Length: 248
Image 1 (cartoon, rainbow, N blue to C red):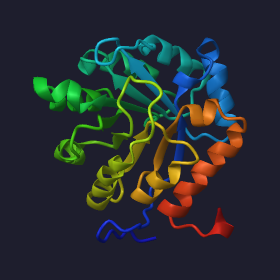
Image 2 (image 1 turned 180 degrees about the horizontal axis):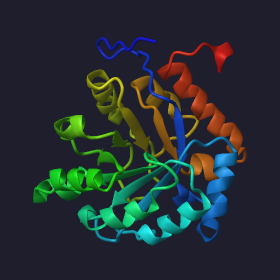
Image 3 (image 1 turned 120 degrees about the horizontal axis):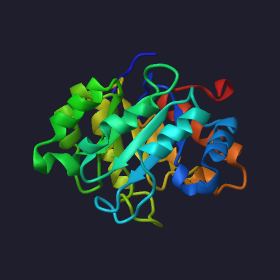
């Protein structure tokens, strides 16, 4: 399958379709079981939101919880979304949860937390030094140029489709222009979207070129968890990978 992008029309790419439930919407008292439940229902990876109460007003959990979760789920990809004001302080601690083999942990941090302090490159270097994948994310008000500046050095780009740390928001459709721009420039990059992504909005993300789909309430609050995961998976495979209906 060749990757072609012309004038931002819907095109196909080869990046794998992956659904990552956001565990913030699960029963946090049963985190390991809830993670396993979503994976058994067809999820591909887990999206772990670390909130420090400074970069965003909420506090969720920290590196030690991720390390403990890894003991129960050793062989699954974790995307650690660091909504922290000083992500450089947590790199080594999160690295303790790397899993049973290399490549199972991505440390995804916010450009807005590091660039004003001149720390973005330092954090990228520290993540690599600790043998993790590098993820860089931007909030809705930050232009895509922020990602493009460092794109050659990262493994995953996360385009926020809501404002981080604020609940009850709807999917911000104009963010799909960022996804299209990034997919055109980097056809083989993992591009993730996070915020308000559910079966009714996933087609927009899939058509724009996102291949990693984060969904919280779309998975954990669903009446049919497996059905919702399958719907979102098939959307990316159809509109992103170009699979025919009979192949889904």
